[in-house]
Structures are given as structure tokens and as C-alpha cells.
Length: 334
Image 1 (cartoon, rainbow, N blue to C red):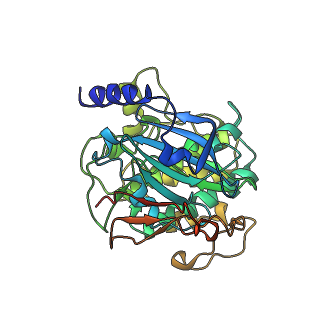
Image 2 (image 1 turned 180 degrees about the vertical axis):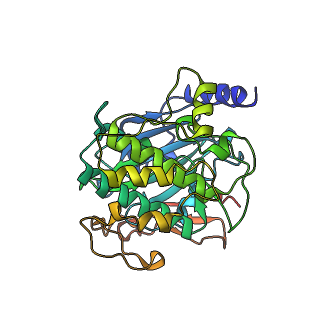
Image 3 (image 1 turned 90 degrees about the vertical axis):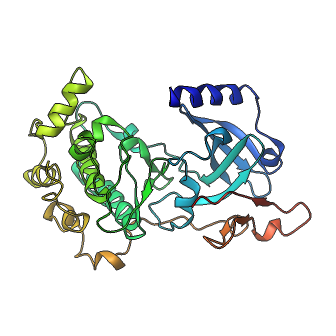
């Protein structure tokens, strides 16, 4: 009933039509990218610079729900394989989250069903994804909804981790009580519905993702949700014989049912299969991302958050220091 009520409220707000002037004065909406039960995502163009951005519109009736702290979580992240937050605009009805646009869609579109993708390409993209998730963990954030649909690709074919709507902050050893996400990627401890540690759950989801990338099939599939849960809890899946022994070994290690025995991200990144075709990696805490980021538009440095110091977000790009400069108030979630 709780979610049905808010879903109905969002549908009513969507009937308001076009985006509000506080947003459209500075951005031209180009087309839709995606829509869920509680948000819409559109491609937009910054009127002053012509830069394309992705904008997620969140209905403010939802804004105080704990799993919609996405802008606050993203504000502290700066990594070539994590989507960049540019700006947050708050109006009467919506909060507009303006982000970097990754123009090649998501990883899901590259995975043939069945068959998967070539191992070399899967290794490259999975390595980048691992680096993004590892960075988030170092910053004290667990994603909790890792899947190919949340791994976007930029114009150079590099991974950009997206959609932190279900993510959470954590400290070492902290137990979480968040049980939403995508069932096919749930870790066994989440299926059990008991408090769990976030990083091992992310590792499990990465294992499911790798299996899907290499085979074009999810490892835990059944006709009902209960049967899927049973397979996950048992760790029962078909060994992907069409992939190398090294990849099979990595998948086996990651998909360990007991989270205390599951490898950490650091251990996964040292696996021989991931090391193929790459020089020895430095320490995880100082690891250099392998993606090559695009040079930023010097006229489009929009967001300078005074993170955890005040509730003000300001657009300070050089071209905006004129009459009509964007300066918005945004709610910082604690």
C-alpha cells in the first residue's frame, strides 16, 4: 500500500506535463531515455554550452524517502567509471538531478542472448566496473543494485556506473536492512531478509553480472520468484562451459553463498583471469582507472557542492557568470 500510494502520486504529478521553467530556462529537453515507477530520465541539452546531459526528475512527494538520497551520494564521487553529477535543481513539484550523459546506452544492450560477449571485451568492461565499485566502497558507499542495466557506456565505450537510487552509506562491519533491488542479482543474505554487510552483497551481484556477460544467461533462473530464491540460497547454477576455465574459476569464487567466505573486491581483482592482458595493478587504494575520460567542457563545470557544510549548490561555469546565472537551492540529505 505504501508504494502504491506514492506511485499514484507520481502519476498525478506527471500529468502536469512539461518540465518547469526553473529547469527549462537552462536546459532543452530532447527525448526520453527511461521511466520507472518513481522517476523519469530524459536527454537534455544545456542551452548555454550545447552539452548533452541526462536528467532524472524525482517527484518531491518522494523526496523524504530514505532510498532517494541519490544526489547526496553522488556528490562525493569523482571517478572516470562513475557517472558524474553536474547539478541539482529543486522546484515546487520536482527535484531535477542533472548528470553526465553516457551516449552508448547500457551494458545490457551489448550482451547477446544466448551467447554473451567475447571474453576480452567482457574482461575489459568488468574490470572497469570493478574499479568503479571498489572506488565507491572506499568512499563508504555500496551500490546495492549492480546489474548490466546500471552500467552505462560513454562514447568511447567505457563503463559509467549509474543509478545510485538504492545505494547506501556504510562503515566497516555495519549491517544494512535494505531489501529492495533486482531479485535475479540478489545475494543470498538479502534473500534471507536478515541484516547484512553491503560490500559482499555487491560482490555477489558482480558475479551474476559477469556470468550474464559471458553466457547471455542469468545463473539463477526459474518460473517463480520462490524458485529463484531457492536456487540463490543453494548457489545452484549451470557451469558456463562455453567460457574459459579462468572465467569459470572466478565466477565460482564470487558466487559463494556464505558472505563471510566470499572473496572481497580486492581479492577478486587479483584473480588471474582479470589480470590477463594487463600489467600488475597497484594497491587498490591508489589504483589508476583504466578508462580514458573525455576532456570536460570548460564552460560546463556546473556543480560545486559545499558538501555537508551547507545546503547550497551553485552553477559556476565561466559562461554562467553573467546575468541570469544559474544558482539553485538544493536539499542535501543527511
